[in-house]
Image 1 (cartoon, helix red, strand yellow):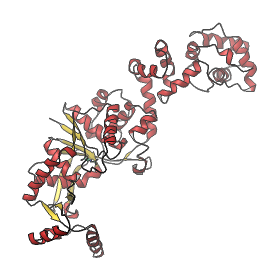
Image 2 (image 1 turned 135 degrees about the vertical axis):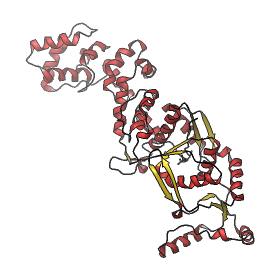
Image 3 (image 1 turned 60 degrees about the vertical axis):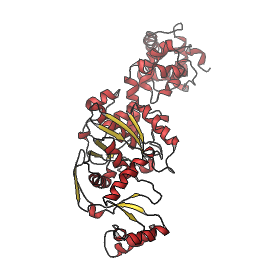
Image 4 (image 1 turned 30 degrees about the vertical axis):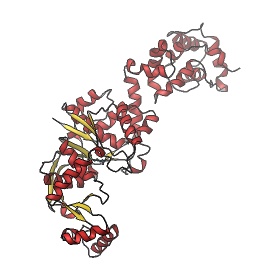
Length: 443
Ligand code: GLU
């Protein structure tokens, strides 16, 4: 069974880049009727916070990315200990004692000699006696002994990848304070949970080589890997600095709809054009992880604004009705009102602006050169309330009684009645008005 996982560290809130990874994993599992696991990488108890765990749940729920199982690495420390002791037994983990300062000195020396700054395995040569003596002074930490060879895998997005681990330092996987590092804990989890496909950012490529070696040392073959490119700004700049603005929280507060985010992320950077999809089923029908290129993917948040507008134009009313009512629009008038304004809003809260227009809580705009014309127009309005014919009859009457046409005819009327230069069709505006406009024209 296809089993995927999304593995955030609860050390911060989710941003658009995290969601891209989450979505890919989610869709891959759903496509094959498989399982999607949410794994919280929280071995670092000082940096991991419950508030971030809660925020991760909320953001994923808001987006509709439901998980089938949740796992916390902090609950699995015994299991990591067990597997670590296997690797100590088999000689893959070795204890080290160099301090950060000593390591730094080694690196500087290597660089001076024109050598790559790779850990020289000095601790691997220590005798039991020497280790004992060193343990008196400081706790040891553990490195994994890499095979120092070419690691090769066929990546679902990057194609054939070869990484030579001779250029990589043996990674520290257990710290002196006993903390298991991600690279190791993740391998144990991926094996235990039967992960078949690992989808993550291409910043993990070197980790993958290491993890493939750890998996082999534990006697397993590795899952399939898909390393997607990272999102970059419009000019190709890294998004890292702006990630706060691009958190799911922030986007949500700015009125971006989940469907806009999902529709964009499921296709941006692939050969399939980005178009609004109304739900995950529609996304699944076209999504293809194989259609992504390995090149950096340009991200433009304006596209999310456009997709959000598209969403309002296209979403069936029954899906949005609850929110329209919540914003204060009476149920009985909701649908007609929504249909009139949905093409003119960037975010849903803007419907309140249009509701004010219908209740004439506006400041009409009447230019001096239009005053006479607007006064005449108001005097020619039929009895209130209006209907869908009012606008047509009214402007025809005005055309015959004045020399105005086109923008000179329509714009002053729009400005006087809505206080805005654009908006829903005037035919609907007049039909939906809840109070007669005449009372509001300043004399
Ligand atoms: N916690 C890791 C991260 O957020 C997970 C990486 C992975 O998917 O293996 O980078």
